[in-house]
Image 1 (cartoon, rainbow, N blue to C red):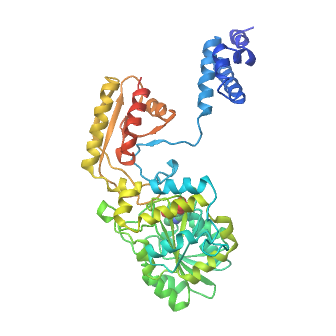
Image 2: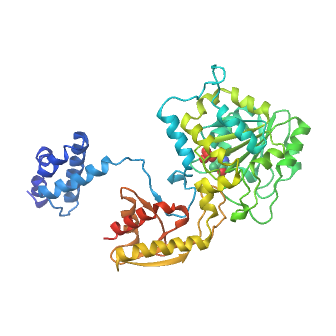
Image 3: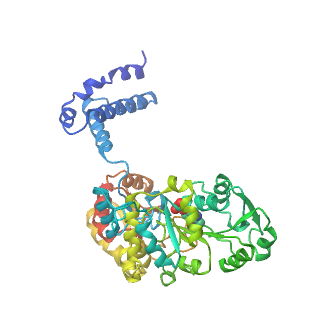
Length: 464
Ligand SMILES: *Cc1c(COP(=O)(O)O)cnc(C)c1O
């Protein structure tokens, strides 16, 4: 018998491991299935390490310790809060926009019990779930009507299907975007049974290109906001107002997918001049779609505003039933939209807008505060510096925009930067930073000031 085989035989049986003193104590607070799975995983890992020629500690105490760690990890929720110090404000992997206090309260209030989701409280008859946000959306965008679905990809699918199924939609070649997560405009069109007619060249499309493509099969003129990339240099695209004019001359509706969609002019915060939803509606576009959880700063949702007749067609389509959103989403959306009734309140209450508006001076002070709190705790285990570092909007919005600011840079002495980042990810409250030039950058712009104490505690623990 070789050495590995004899070592494998030293591994305890699972029941003996589970009867270790420390684990019988843990069994009082941990479901048995989780403890058993943790023990199985620990034994399997030891077996694998042995087969790979390693020398794991096979003592019952060491194995019980590992089992307890694995069991503790399995007790944490899988979907849980993280501290976003990446400097990307709308990180799709981190859940995009954080909700305002009022939006969170609204979610809790309707989630806790029953609600007026589809009940008209005036006369006691059946109501419509859109009713809670339609008037607000119309007020904020100047549209005649509005509806809401699960996300903007769903909004585009619904609008294309309802307005152009079995027929043709004309779109500029420069706007055939892939938004990420394999959401591609041509594929959405295909799945909606819409035939795509591409016009123009990648960098330039003129009104005449659309005009020449219009035929008896044309059902729709489509404009897509190229929110996650830029074609720069020698470019031309057709403004919405001109497409509307062309559409009107041929009796064709115009659909514009704005992607992020802004209700306020955000140029004072360094964002480029882009049409707001209201400006797009004012240009006469029949149906405008945008996300609830990008720059709007609300819950995941696909917002659809426009002309009454077109919105009614969408509302009556069978896909609407499959794409509708739930009561919590509508509650959060209504509360978020209410902030916008007073733009100053929106800037104060909506976390995404507050983060956008933070100034470099403020961000530098926050870095200094973080360093002051952290330095005595980590002593000489890492070098701490403050470096200029921009933040980005993210979520497929405004890729070329850099929001100037600062980050706290950590260079650990006794471990690699990758190890530090991994340790921070695996904490009960994980911390997500960004690695650059062999340093871990923590950008305060995407972090709530109220999270700074937790951040310092996590860093101190990870650097031990
Ligand atoms: C982000 C985006 C979408 C998809 O929106 P989701 O809310 O993520 O479904 C669609 N079109 C454009 C132009 C976008 O930027």
